[in-house]
Image 1 (cartoon, rainbow, N blue to C red):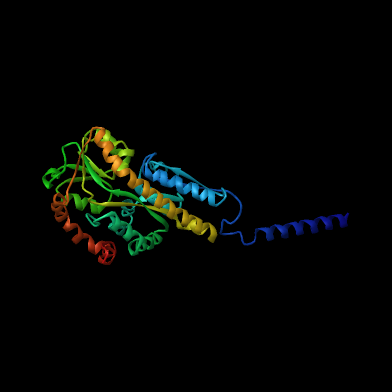
Image 2 (image 1 turned 30 degrees about the vertical axis):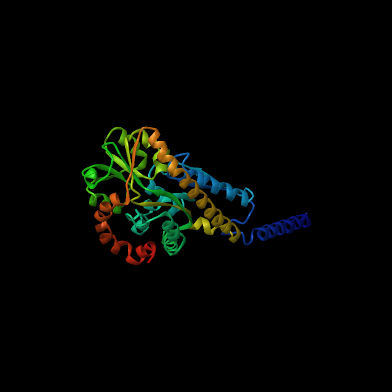
Amino acid sequence: MKKVISLIMVIVLILGLAGCSSNSGATGNNQGSEKQVLNMSVTSASGSTWEKGALYFADLVKQRTDGKIEIKVYPNEQLSGGNQGKGVEMLMSGSTDLTFHSNIIYSIMDERFGVISLPFLFDSLDDVDASLAGAGGEEINKILLEKGVMGLGFGENGYRQITTNTGPIETLDDLKGLKIRIPGMKMYTSLFRALGADPLTMNFAEVFTALQQKTIDGQENPPDTIQASKIYEVQDYMTVWDYSYDAIILGMNKVKFDSFDAETQQILIDAGKEACEYQIKINRELASEQIKFFDENGMKVNVLTNEQRAPFREAVQPVYDEYEPIMGVELIDLFRGK
């Protein structure tokens, strides 16, 4: 009987050692074959180029990891209950794994992110691309790391245009006293006050109803957001003035990113770059079509000339005086191409 018991103990010891051996080196990474599901939050509504870019990213990652990583995309800020600022906080804390959020929303956490959207900063989209692909984008990625976010690429919300129900915006007088919804970014408050308007912040999920009920006179957003959110149904006028550029950041929680092995990390980086390039491509292709769509669906669209934009550009110069000490002249100059 004692021999039987001794034999059983030996077998148990051997199995235990084998189990320890099989698990060695697995702690702290995700190199195993177990499937992982990551959650990705997208601010804009279903059907937007944001969502399409996110879904493209998810497909690339799934293909290149042989299905080991599945990314579930949640549009319309579902994971944060419509609160974009909370959405960024959830990414930083690890409650959400990945997000597509505007640099404007990141500026709630750190005003340096607002540098990309300073008024009339860029003369063309070529200038935008060069800045984000160069030293300017590199500096933004460093600031993201400070916040616990790994930047996987820059997508595009695009130039922000203004819509109203009071008439076209052609001069500074046309903006005077108008209640314009803006994102929760302090720089935009200063900007629209400099232009003579009455800026109001509110969650984007509330904007359609506020416009419908005429609680506010207008709002400003890129064309894709205006179309996806059907704002054209409750606004009569749209002015194309390219006053501020809006990038979207494909961010991943840094702790989650670090949990993967080097090969998977490279897959995520490469897929992020490709997905952002795809999103930018379709966003720009749609822009002119969307302007035409608004016109065909009852909005009166006017496009400001460079001469017409000049007084607006001059009026917002105090914004630079205010924000150079906050954002840093060196950072701003990286985007000015200096």
